[in-house]
Length: 460
Ligand SMILES: [Zn+2]
Image 1 (cartoon, rainbow, N blue to C red):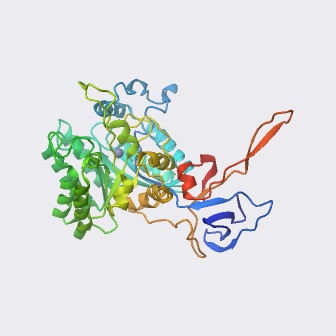
Image 2: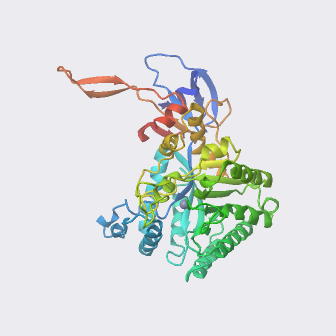
């Protein structure tokens, strides 16, 4: 595999295999065409590493950790979905938060980070909830995890208000917890996130966004909104004009482009309601965003959107009619010229009980979900879970497959191996039989049929 700092038989360009010689510090010393010999390993792919632009750290694996087997950890098994509704998810997550302990948060968090790294993730924006129930515990645990995993992952902490901060009886208390944490843990928080749509009135949603924009500017943070998480038609009550329009207006009102550090981005997650807009409305919206020069990145969160949205109403005559709505990320990029990427959002909790959290698996499902089946679509979807995701959270792009040259640093890139063959029990008196493995030779192969975790490693 990697012997004496040589990555043998690596596929740098679809048409050719190369050996890449690395210096001890990971810089490319030289490349030479691979020579086919019986000892040559199967082809390997060197790709930009994966990135979670939006993943919830403190509530990961609440329903799949099965920590009730140990008296050291809280039991969440009674909170598993009954109706699966969004309100139930919010309520049960609040109940789960009452049971959080430092050991439990650290264990589940480290399980998410370990799994992500094994899947090929080297950077992430991790959301940690701050409110009157959990206080700052999810944040202080995230700070420990960030330090303990710093040699493997770039963990960007997003201080996040999942609950209302301008309405309900706990709004003021929740906002106070956020405000105090932004000051006390200033050096450890990189992004500020809120959920304007959970407020009980439009006025409170607008206050939520105004407060978040002001606080992000004051503390020099990236800004991240969970927005317009509904499939209600945008033009009719009770689902009026999407809040995305208001965010843009408020950002301009606060002169974000002039005042904010140019490295800070604005991420808009979910925005399912925007999938109801017509082409002409999208065109106008895209034009407004592009003209504004605001560093807005849309984060499609299809795993949660498809699970949570479009459920039949209580009095609905047909439980079979379930509108599916999620941002059509490839169209946002290709047709509207917007910045967009894909995030996993949740894993093993009330908002998304299923899945492994693997961004590459999500990119693969996205082929069907977005009806994006061309080779260039596959390449774009890989970008959506790697370089485009990195850009959305304010990180640099990684070297592209096919552009590796002498003097570049390759440490941190994702190495995908191929298997030579699979051994099976034999027939006709033979002890075994051997079947040559299909080889993944391009991004199309990787996205359409993601390699097993055991074939992935981060170059270091
Ligand atoms: Zn989220």
